[in-house]
Image 1 (cartoon, rainbow, N blue to C red):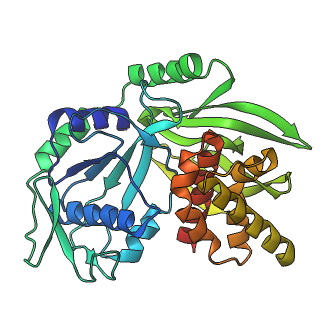
Image 2: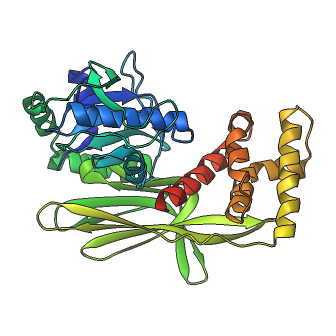
Image 3: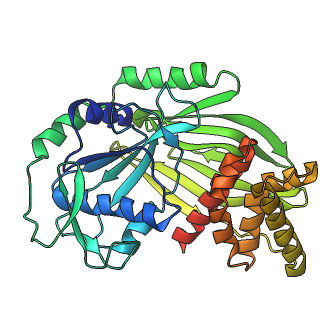
Length: 380
């Protein structure tokens, strides 16, 4: 098993951006431009390095390689985005890797692009990229080409060496367990479970029981062997179950209007472990959005837009309106899921104003609402 934290360190220490490796400060998949840039690099790395894994490291300053981290990104359906726009798409995997020097809500993203032999190209337009465009790597740049791409094996020895030097050890596993349970989460309930005598999962959270169900909030879950963060949220809650062969996380989203909140199952993630040292992750979307009276939603929708307009203009808003602004993103998401088609774009357009608000929950709720909408879109 590869320790993903070691792998990132080895990529940063020994290689500048190349035909098998790229680094980014952050990903922006909220916009067509951000999606196009991400897909361009996936296409170029896949075509230029067809015999080996290629990697994109997210959360690193380009100039000095400083690890600054990025938001936890749990969208397992990012593969659906690649499949939607690329012909002959490579298989990709996005993993969240914690680093000791980063805050608990920040990780380094690791995109692994699996090898494949056929040339990838765009099958439809996105932003300024036209259909049938092919990208390759030239040094640290992803550029379009009309030339036939020769099959290359040039990086095989280099990548094998990097991956072999990133293998896990008992010491790394034990250090990871102690760091998780003693150093980072001493203030809350922490547990661990060993699967197949090979894999260790640690999790921590604040338990609360509602009727017959125990929920965990402020949850942090890691697969220690590979230094992968499986789940993190300062807001949402989860339920956890496991047996000798699998570990299951069901994420629940608190949603409601007029201060009435219920927990709605969003997504189920099941990890199945095998005796041969492999594991498999399976996700299932469970979300059924709440339905509300259309007339009531029209009133709430317009009232929330009015509050945002007042805030944008610098007009003093009341305590009640400040609470409405805090819940603005979830309210517009509920409106969108109930047929208000322009609500999603209104929410995206409001991002810079929500981010500038002095209440950190305002922008945090925006990111959570966009994450849910993105999951639903890719699931479709």
